[in-house]
Image (cartoon, rainbow, N blue to C red; front, side):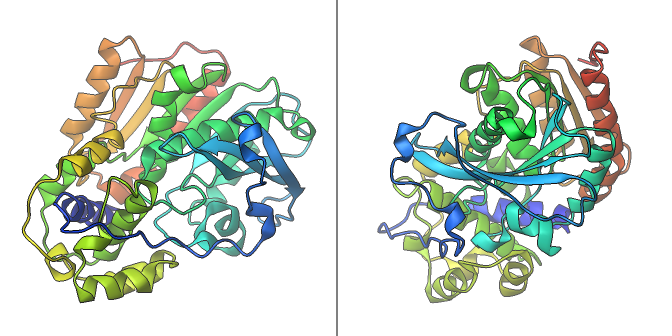
Length: 391
């Protein structure tokens, strides 16, 4: 399903890459009904990564672990202050400066109720059981709501900010006992994009974080190129691409205008999924294309192109300094050649990268096959084993 979702995301990029006749306001989600998520009035007085609120939450799915939720200060893509959330899981025995892995799940949704801080516990997150593999190694785990307080699906640079500030929050939160912990980053598909941006932003944005290693897989490294390669044909998961367009418009309201280009069918679909999770989005948008929902000629929009480049690792200038394990399916719809291009740039900059192209694997299969290798890679980095490289 995630393989087809990449095609849908490409359609979203194609949808957005055209001039709008008149600007329209984005549709934002209903705020979370839980007041714990609300930003305090003095938010700007706090530093990046400062904990604003904390609470312990029950978590039967993670036996023996203590689980906190932390609201912390971060910034959006315009560098404006936001309150963001991360869920911190500590295995039995307490923190004790044990390794801390920030795991970024793929989140294909627009409603606040779909965020990881909810889906971890209500059965909505497919990746949740795998976190027990990390906890069983004795590692603490942080799971950020990396789409932010408006569920800005598609806004990858925002995800990088939130991931790094979530790690700062976890390390500053004294009850977790993680102040001296080495750090790892991990994620696949959309979660891999947030992971990759966190790694690329870290040298300037959070240089104090002791990032021992990064494991990211199935990363769509250039949304615009996906649009060119996959085109605008009807797609079973077109709704996910449409949702990503809505998420980017939420994050860049002055630079993106999807709503102003929508025809009546497009406006109906927008309103229907504005607060939806993945399954409802897929059902509502199934087998449509951008021509079904948009008005006007297909003319390039330089502002939109710039936003897409800012949220694509291939064109984002930042380079990770921590060693990277990157895996990708040979048969993935995201061209492995693009992944090799990004890897080569990182290598030229001196980053140690181990690129693993999994023979014959598509997007979905590669996620499963590469995960255990990724966790083993992080284990070696935490143990001080020199990072391999096939640059």
